[in-house]
Length: 147
Image 1: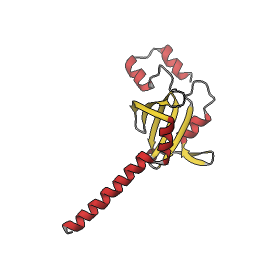
Image 2: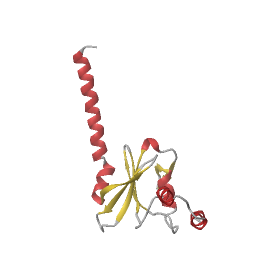
Image 3: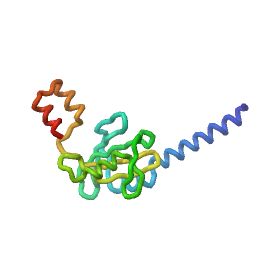
């Protein structure tokens, strides 16, 4: 392959990557999200997503925003005749159950989903709580088992 042909292929690939980045940053779902919420910082991450702290613009309510990549979604369901990750379906179905974090909103983008949930204060990830305690008493363990 000659250098000019190789250069054209690299330029085309770079242009495609820039287009994908623009879609990521300005996708229809993300632009709607940006109008309603202001991201503050990362709370944590796991194998299937990253959770951010954010503020709802309309009333300055603190929220948690989870981003999950479309390629990481293993189970799908239907919500209002739309195909969405099962996590969104289950949060919507459990919204009236006391003690379950409430789904406030969700946004679909080409690369994934933003799940907006309530963020009680104070709060801590269960894994982090257990790790900080080193050892859970039987009484504390029973509290978790009662859910």
